[in-house]
Length: 337
Image (cartoon, rainbow, N blue to C red; front, side, top):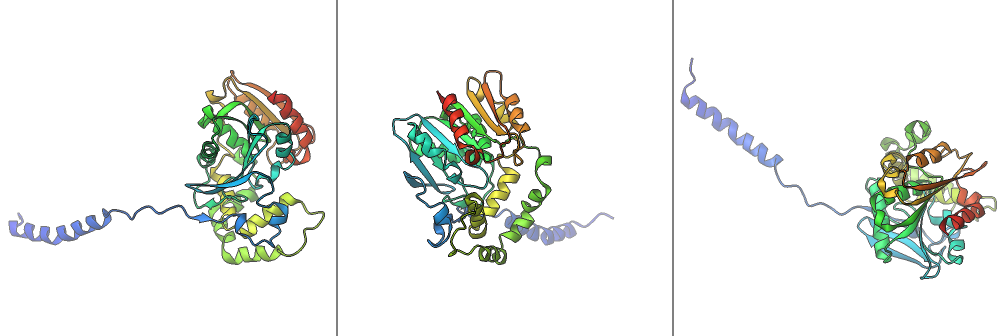
């Protein structure tokens, strides 16, 4: 039986209004985008906290702050203003304290040295965002623009090496001919990352470890008013303090491991941006964090036009700028002549 036209009209009047209302509600224009939430840096901690004794805001001379879209960045400029420009990029967990035996010596040799704390570390804010390679390379590009540097030699240790490699690929016009990679990440296979590290960096675990009760517990383990033991490792201590007291630190580490310049940078090292450049790789044979094999892998990825040299540190571990500063300085000196 053919439906009566009036029945069709009735059904239409019953169905169309709620359908149009639903469409209108779902098509409503979203709220304005909000600014990036920023977690505080070490500068927010009270003066009695041990962090100020280990790694103070003015640990190096020539320090200053600059505000970028993803937070306030702490940086230092050392050495004569007319010196050859060189940028030092620290790694995953330890801020620019890692350069304590390198940066002053380079400045004394006449170089103009730029150091800075990466987002989420040290005295730089921790934005609530994804800590991918682009975040880090853009941070350095903005910083070089701020200090009016047209180009510089780029040096990175550990994850800083991955950043240096990606920075060269992303912003080749800002790199002054030479790149130095110390115990560099960038091509690590997921299978070489410890299972515990993968587990601890998962979003679920990070939400637990970043909760107030857990952070309070960690803070109680670090007595802020107790003297620093003579045998204490300052690098490990500053990592513990950041993890316990800075609400954005653990998330920054976790996201960097999962999304950042630890893995997946084959494209960067193979980039034509490395053609015509000199690349120095320094790596220890006993590096358990970034196995020695990755130095050779990075070297093999470089395009034919790149001139590379691999310095092997026998029995050397991961923190070569701390354990072998004289060797690192000597190799850098020869390389930058």
